[in-house]
Image 1 (tube, one colour):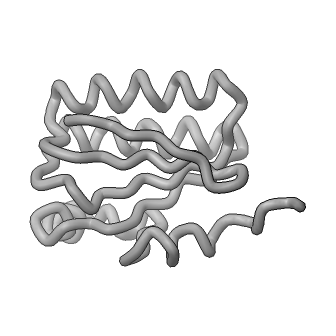
Image 2: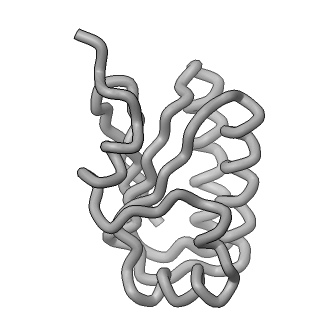
Length: 115
């Protein structure tokens, strides 16, 4: 899995692509730790290019959500592909995460940037 990062106001946007498997989960976990250590508390995860997610990927996502919650942060997911959406439905992950269809819809869940 590869990660790209960009900012939209105070929101860190991580674009994920490829397979979110055990190796991808490790890369993702390290990136989340780095973002939190930098003081960021608003993260949008864009899944538009993720073709597969394993149990290790799901576990790392849940851990990231717990870390964000305990740090007073917000984690929102966007653009789940059909295979990933099916896994989320089977595992009832939709009850745990805020999920939106598009990146723009997900961004609307965060406070607007301060001018």
